[in-house]
Length: 136
Image: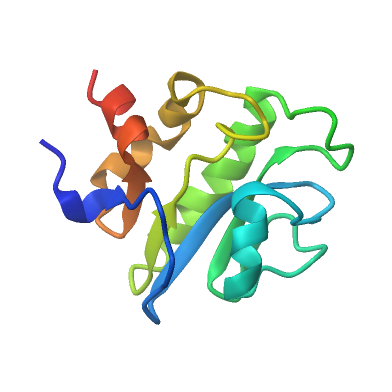
């Protein structure tokens, strides 16, 4: 059973000072649609394609040419960078959105396993559909 406190809300409208909105971006750092557009309200900066910016953390799921998508291997490399960052920042609470499952077109079954290591990280919240995949 996953504690409700470890499930990212479906709709995030505000952040506490120690919370970080984790979203899927493109490698050009153009945050024009989906969760990336929402991230701009909490400090996501144009051209910051990967990593921390304001109260956001970008994980690329698309290349600069947004008509394409990154392969799962490349997304996995970015997710691994995020996991290392989150491990080193236990003072922050990371709210991971369904990265890769919107504009990039992947399914939770594809992306959730990339976050398997986060199961034991109390400062990382994952979407309900990711938890369902990881609980199988």
